[in-house]
Image (cartoon, rainbow, N blue to C red):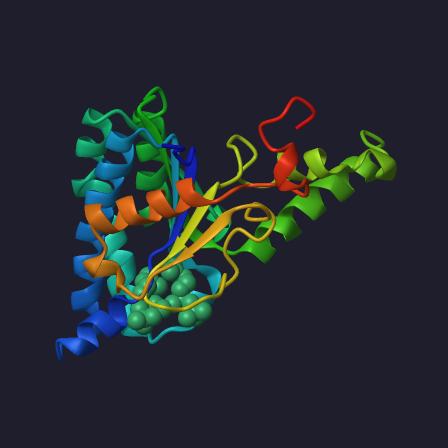
Length: 241
Ligand code: IPE
Ligand code: IPE
Ligand code: MG
């Protein structure tokens, strides 16, 4: 079966999952963290090379303060409590997002997690935290403009691949499969450039209910797709493809 090398997930629906159970929203976030730990292990077991998850978007600062504080606390707990196990399992952990605006209480353990796991090769887990796709394009444009101003680059040299190399995801291939749980069919400012050719998979399952079986369904959906990248079906798999 054709396995996606890189899966990107918008883990959505923690709030609605809580509401269905007449529980406060943080209950769903806590359950969602457990789901994430399961999905990381299953993805690694299946042989996925890269797993990118949207943990906290720049726009999510607009949520009520108590929810934001809970999410920050949960993130810190996960950094302290769960990184050791990821490390033991050979997972490399990397963060993307605007790190300059992240408080040192979080940015220090984030850096520690990256350096602890830097030589692991089983799978790379990329956590998008304080991330947005437009922010990523903005910071890439700023770096490119600085290089042009310093005469290190000409405007004509700004190609598709040069732009990719200035995004926060420069080190990794673009996602092959995008998953969003909980029924919403939008990108919510996630990996805008990088998802250009990803296969898009949506499920009504809320994130806390997403599990090994659900991930396998998404992987099977991916395997059933023909990726043409602009070509026609007859060219795929033939010599001139
Ligand atoms: C996603 O679940 C989790 C984060 C944004 C961290 P939501 O909190 O968006 O859940 P819904 O969309 O309100 O159900
Ligand atoms: C996107 O989900 C962000 C994360 C999952 C971290 P949201 O639930 O915040 O997205 P919108 O606001 O419904 O588009
Ligand atoms: Mg949501």
